[in-house]
Length: 338
Image (cartoon, rainbow, N blue to C red; front, side, top):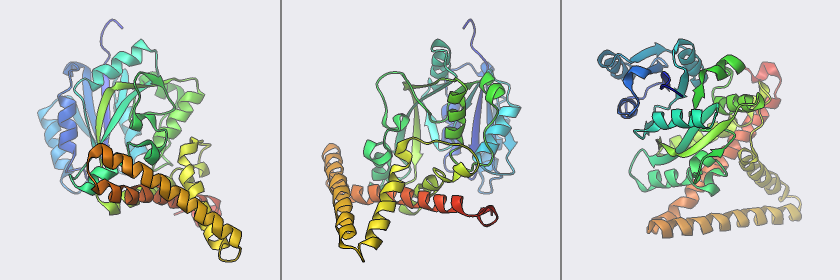
């Protein structure tokens, strides 16, 4: 690589008044040359004051532009940004995140050094609110028991080839080769795209020294809604595409379905009642074990009581969402459509 490539940053957002300034400030503070950079903020018709904030950045920084996303969903925002971008490399960023000052330069470095098609890094999860529940949610979303083998969440020690990454820095040729994001998917669009990329022979690299900071939901209501939504979109996309998630995405579905089946069957057949008791007991013992370890690590006894609630909400909410996604998937097309 003789000279640095031009980089396009694409940020989907909608009603992000609280976070968008932190996100943009961290990108503007990057050590990458500004004459080799453009930031495209794709706004989903915000009505909370976000638009005024991003317009002020566009006015003050010539490399910042604001685009409209009338359909308001993330894959549409990505596609609008990609079509309007000029970069030889395209980085997808989230408005709920901030980025280490060398994030862009490290992405470009490893993209070319490893001849990768997509490069991403470790996502450090932080609480939006400094409460015990907010901290516990952030811990669960970074814990192997909470999220399984999601490497970009749980971390790794050296660069590693993976199936997907958070956001991602792509070569422009990737989109010319395999197309854009699937706009039928309101969620899971990144995993579907990366699966398509790998099927076409593309390589995805996770680099631990590329660091972003994600601010997770800190209140239980939005945490539960998000878990349910993620579970739903782990199954429902099968209606539109042949999308094969890894096993970790289906474990909550299997767990919750087994509780429902054995719980109901146990009313009539004692064997299933005992099986329900066994599954529940094993899960609770596992939750208690990890909660104790976290409480010891954090030196705070409150985590012993809070982590079981968070883990259960994460797993059961995701599992119920997956079950609803499966039910809607199996409904006749006329009934399933909104």
